[in-house]
Amino acid sequence: MQNNFSHPRTKAIFVGCVRALLFRVHFFRLAVLPFPSLEIERTNFFLHVLMFSSGRVITPRKLFHRSAVFRATCQSRQCVTMSNTETGKKAAAFAAVDENIKNNQKVGIGSGSTVVYAVQRLAQRIKEENLNIICIPTSFQANQLIQEHRLNLGTLETCPILDVAIDGADETDKDLTCIKGGGACLTQEKIVASCAKQLVIIADDRKDSQELGTNYKKGIPIEVIPMAYKPVQMKIQDMFGGEVILRMAQQKAGPVVTDNGNFVLDWKFTKPCDSWDKCNTCIKMIPGVVETGLFINMAKVAYFGTADGKVNKRLFNKLQL
Image 1 (cartoon, rainbow, N blue to C red):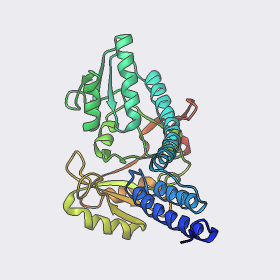
Image 2: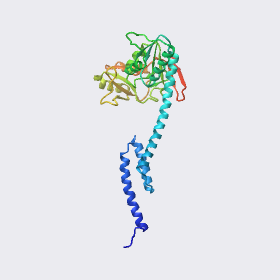
Image 3: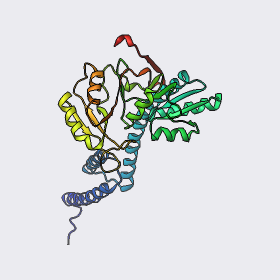
């Protein structure tokens, strides 16, 4: 019997069947590979569809290698971005500590990622210069930072008047009016700041804006008594418009709970108020509101670090108000 396998048409049919089978096998392997995101998975899928259609067979080893290279490239780009941001935070924190902290001071320690660098620098100076500094925390996180670096821990009961408080901000406008509370520590942060002779703001330059709401889109945090969150939510929306959202936790079911056992509402305003001072007063007059994340006429100086390690310093100018 004549062997027709050498016929071009027969070969084409056979190769097509093999490719279809291999495609199904590789599609299954592709589906179970540990990709870090759906976008990367989709990119690799179409990459290998093109390769199969062109007649090239990709082994599982090559498939995984290409996926790993793609992941590494994405991660390296993210690291560069994060590194630039952290450089700015560190530069601002170090400059603020070097210029504002002196011996025998009582210092308020704020909350957030930028404050971590401030505490690191403060611990270095205390060790190198043998400074006598008492630190008052604004949150559980700040308390932990102080203890981890073996700094002197104080309270507002023993130190009701502070020389300086150093804290971060979610956004700062041209008048040094700040939005704070992204970490849900706004009430204790404002209490400590109000006890300090000088509030120093530290942040990377993304937080430096001409008007509030330019860069920070998450809204103004408002701490509320849990039973009052719904009435407060409705009243703020009726008075000022915009959208008021109950902040939900990321790694627990239900809403975020502050160190004081309260809830946090985020007011996403549609346009900046003509007077943040009046707006802040109106919101605080609503029964159930504990505190707002608007820090008005409190900051005396702000340090904004850039990606190249430089620091822009801005002083509070009362004449502009």
